Image 1 (cartoon, one colour):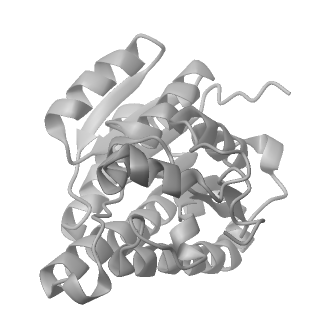
Image 2: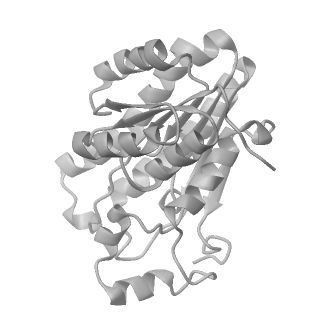
Amino acid sequence: MDIRFDGKVAIVTGAARGIGFACAEILADSGAKVALVDILGEHLAESTKKIQKKGTAKGYQLDLTKVSTIGPTVSRIRQELGEIDVLIQAAAIGPARQAEEITEAEWDAVLDTNTKGLFFCMQAVTGQSMIPRKTGSIVNFASIAGLVGMRPPLCAAHYHASKGAVVQLTRQGAIEWAPHNIRVNAVAPGGVLTEMTMKMIGTPEKMAAAIADVPLKRLSEPEEVAAAVCFLASDAARMITGHILVVDGGGYAAGS
């Protein structure tokens, strides 16, 4: 199966690094015009230059916690790249923290980015571009942490709450926007070899503990998760909506 996005415009949030960058790379390789969106300006500029070597791409610096700026950014993307066919939402923060240590400010920062910002980005893209054209595909980033409880060092109640909310926002969006031919799905990665995950794990001993109950005995590479994301975003998955695709090496299936 050759999955292509020729002539399509795709937004990827959290695209400056990690899984978001891997998604942008696959999309560009597959013919899409890619809007890379991230709060990290310097990283975003570097990543955009790399993607531009593969195809049409532009970077857009955006703080998803500032909801009033989301709509204008989406409008600018439409003006500069065209109407939006695909929205992939990888932007997230998730500092590891024991439940009794989480402050109100930390709680708000995580929920505002991972859940509130994600919802209002969906709202802006569907309202401005997808609903009027009766077409579109959205892939959100949930997490295995939104489906099961987790032990240290990968526990953070505010992150788990935010990703559980993403699961339900995905399902609700799939139902509400189905009459407009808009599909909404999510991936739920387990541990992925990204900068954020490695900060949470910290030591080789903790890495060993993190993979001990994973049947495939390793964490995912960003490109492996991105491949699943791009499948869900593509026309190859045109009958799939409201689905949460777990990408975790079998840990969820094993009850670990």
